[in-house]
Image (cartoon, rainbow over all chains, first blue to last red; front, side, top):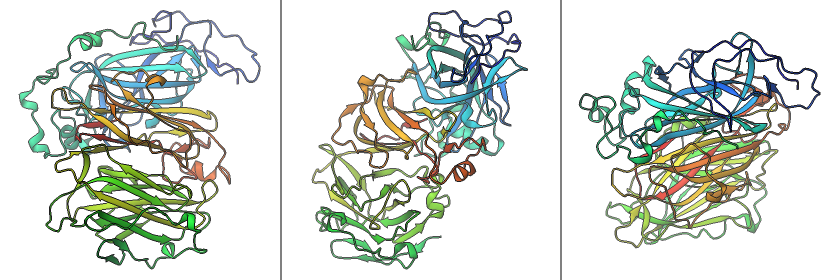
Length: 253
Length: 354
């Protein structure tokens, strides 16, 4: 396959950072040069300029199946997926990377200092001339994003809806694992599907249990937003990780 | 629709008589001696419970997935709970999987003691999404037909007389897996002699958003399950595990998970299977789960052209990408799985799987 051509990359609302192995992060950069043309068959499919470090930003899936760029501090809809539970759909779009990436996504709980759940999958990308990014080929489908499970989650130190969490997405070029990014952003998952609003609110409660009814479970009025339950507060390594933004955490080096 | 089986409760063994449906006829020819599930002996009530799904036909070109319902018997004779600390599971050659669940929330799959649901709702995984796993086996080699699983010392599973169990049996007799002599399942539940054992827990985790496509033939998917406890200092121990995928699966791996986002190192790997049709059941383990962590699993795939072409595979692809993509589903021939079975102690409700 040939390399894909560039379009002019729009200057995104900055999202994140990108950490590449030994290379700097993403900024709004000048338009990159056209890649060399004429490579022969068999060369790995590539979007952008292999001489430049990879760049990326977080994207997410809306309830109605659109892909949107991520904005720091936004809300993310909790969706009932086929596998059950409630998940948020968060992914990435990139340039200066191959056409297929390995994506690993998770939500970090500052209370306990651990990731609540991990989802890893390969992702096929397509070049979008309008946005200037290589984006998920099927943005309306669930498996084009990290399916980050949030509810129910007995491993969290607080509710998993209406509370802010740090989301982390790691992206690695499947054909060249030296090309890797770590993208992070903070967002608040919210129960957004009207048909499942009550179930969602119940399942996402920190004290949700299959042994109790939802009426018994809810303690929201007594637990202020942002409060870790007593005994669950992270100590040491967990503290401050939410602010780290992932610099220098690139994989594959 | 559940079809009633005639349930025959003998003095020591519960068995199901043959049903009248076509898929339950005795197969021809009769199996050779080595495929007659030797080693799963009938138990007395004092010893435990012998569950038997009698022989049924699995015609060429067919996948049979049926759900059998059983009520746990009153082994103590006084209605008290029964502790089981050893299982023996035997199946005729060709079994794709056999899972035993405790019946919980009823969606569209239901049955009473002695009923069997053939295909249909027995193929829809959302019907047993919150049904706790009792045990499973994927072993059906003729020279190793029975899995004899002794739980760790002082650990057992608890059953209440009358509690409804569902045994799901999936046999394949098609291009990729053969069932030469029909299907049959025998399971022994051995009573524990320990007075107050620690209860074993289990998890059945599925990575359902998977795609294995012709354009990208080598892919991997990761999932993780987190354990937590409200008891300070509580540790969890993994006793047994196995993984399940279909014929495009090349390697199934499981690791203790420390709660981080990095893929666990291979030096920590606690399970590996490279045999999709006869994945090993790892037993006799005692792996301590990292605090605030759990289990991480990875499924590796190599796309292969479907026997008979891509049409049926493409028809199952919700994205309709026309890329011969295998997606999550029960058909061993035309879809894929990435399922982890893990058994641990002590039991907790606080296990969360991505």
